[in-house]
Image (cartoon, rainbow, N blue to C red; front, side, top):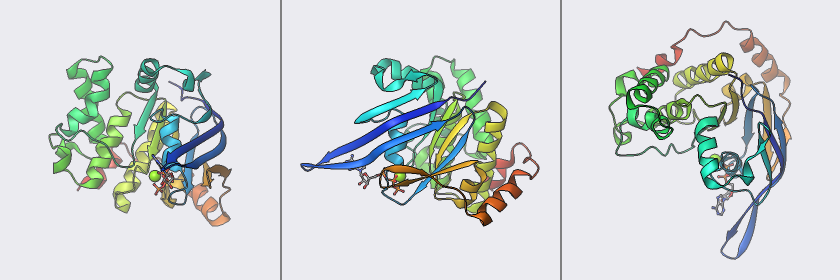
Length: 255
Ligand SMILES: Nc1ncnc2c1ncn2[C@@H]1O[C@H](COP(=O)(O)OP(=O)(O)OP(=O)(O)O)[C@@H](O)[C@H]1O
Ligand SMILES: [Mg+2]
């Protein structure tokens, strides 16, 4: 299975706030090839989450085109977009958005159930992914009975359950300690290697940013390619040549 190709053209997003127009995205052009991994960095308030929400069709752009595998998704009606999103895009929210009354397994399985998979098959996938993010001991916990970092890992498992060709992740390791975060980074890179999944990750985490092949920086609603400073580039190369992590490495962070 190949990753999705993402072609973003002239993307603008403004909000009307108390009679004023706030221009958050001010003309973004970005081409992401199938299987590419891109880190989006930038200051708080720069528009990174807004960008991801618009890409994931959770919000509409003011103007511009978002072409995923040749299809201009901005033109889709809401029903077609919902189906396309369910099958193609995995979204990890900055603030999780888990359903409070459902367990970790049920939250993770939800997109698969919505797509019509049987409950046993959806739950089998959910358990497998929850194991991969190191949560095999928390399967029946509800979000209120999980730590912030555990909730974040459930949100990641949920985003992966449909085996998306494009993963949009907003600070997926923002609440995690270094070791658990590193295990999740390993998992993202593993999934990219295994499935060619295209990855766009908003992150303040330099450890993760340098492990992705490409960095773009959001500055005042525009993107600039961010060539790595040489020390980081060196460490990225060093890490790229490291042996691949053992599978199930993510479980290391569960203790
Ligand atoms: N619905 C909205 N109405 C008005 N302004 C908004 C709305 N949503 C976001 N903004 C503004 O857009 C700007 C960008 O917000 P966004 O959440 O995209 O930032 P961010 O880069 O993700 O920041 P952080 O790193 O803190 O998560 C902020 O200044 C925010 O106040
Ligand atoms: Mg944000």
